Length: 259
Ligand SMILES: [Zn+2]
Image 1 (cartoon, helix red, strand yellow):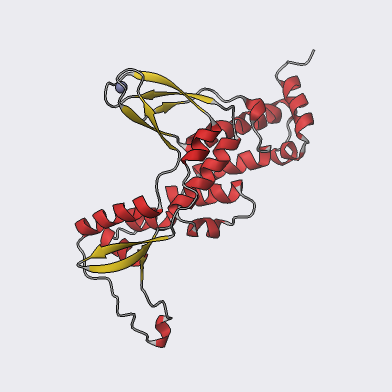
Image 2 (cartoon, helix red, strand yellow):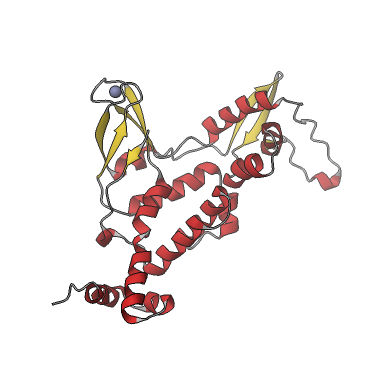
């Protein structure tokens, strides 16, 4: 459901200025959403290159973003959510642990589904596959299903091996239904909490938007650089090179907060 977020407390931001600027650059890059997510993950995790982030499964990508989001801001956090049953707004207080508990630690890399009486193995799509194959390349669901099919005998095709387990022809409609099952098994949604509506007692699903949360906690970097550049004529590079404690002091000076 829709979440409304409080203003972040800047003092709780744990990412340094350069990384926050890099996050913003990743989020506004002129690319598709999947490519922006890969870039954002590579900025947030020093040990994950952009090309590696591309290859992570959709679930793994969501988990990475949620982990970083939970490091930012004040927790427990307060949200406002709308019940889809009674349309009443209610306040929700969520702890970090609530979201951590919502992450399935053992998310299978592949699953088996029956198609035309044949049991076939499929793997989870990577984030890039899930979005770019369907949205950009214009390929249908059946094409994506073909990409996700894992032949039983994974011998290199270069040897001319036939795996004897080709994916039967399937309509886009049937492929859609199979893709939903693959995602349910191998890529369950992350950051979703089932809560009881205090007004009508029906269950409401609260979905936490990790990228939105991260965005709200890094965006102040633009203001910090702008204030210091205007006040002292420094470049972005020079401002980023300052130790944080000195930068905060100059920020107070520039904002007229130093006595
Ligand atoms: Zn309700």
